[in-house]
Amino acid sequence: TRSTRPQRMLKAVQKNATKGNPKSVISAIDYFCKHSEWAMNVGDEKGSILDSVVTEVNPSTVLELGTYCGYSTVRIARLLSPGTKLITLEFNPANAAVAKQIIAYAGLQDKVILVEGSSGDLIPQMKERFGITTFDFIFLDHWKDRYLPDIKLFEECGLLRKGSVLLADNVICPGTPEYLEYVRKSPRYESKYFPAHLEYTKVEDGLEKSVFLG
Ligand SMILES: O=C(NCCO)c1cc(-c2ccc(F)cc2)cc(O)c1O
Ligand SMILES: [Mg+2]
Image (cartoon, rainbow, N blue to C red; front, top):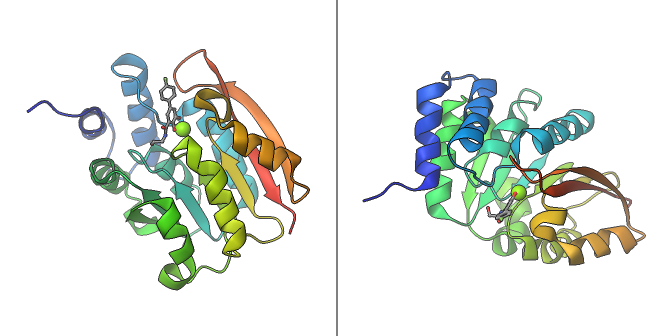
């Protein structure tokens, strides 16, 4: 039967990237998306902003919502200090299976804990399952209608501390209007918008960085 786009992306990584070289995996995926098939990775323009925020925060505890094929997982994991792991949640088992292989091809499997399931179910389990007290950095890139309920869940579960940084993809396209209104109006967050474009296109999009004030 016909392969899926994530499977074709994985093939492109195995063909064009160098095993154990995260930078070449990132480049191979970006090339595939620019010249073969568009796919919903955060991409190189927004990815550079992601890199700069991760580098600035230098987090010890990291959560990604929405693994997809592992592109942003590789971008983040390659920048983490030795011994630091990132937890990434993916609802779609087929995508998780591809992501696992792309993360392994980059040689970053020891820095990543990939968990299959819904964020609504898994966020309340973070403390008991992974011994997390609070997250230093959270990247939101999953279903856009889950951003608002999940940030409220982080608050309710006591997973944020003064200075926790949340970075949200796609706040313009596809858009997360309710989430944006919440973080920009709430006195408990200091928010900043980073303008960019929808991955591999000229369509306007951007990232919203929100710091929890405690
Ligand atoms: O749904 C998304 N992510 C959760 C599932 O993994 C997502 C969608 C799009 C997108 C799609 C279709 C279009 F026409 C425009 C944007 C872009 C993204 O960056 C995304 O993260
Ligand atoms: Mg996205």
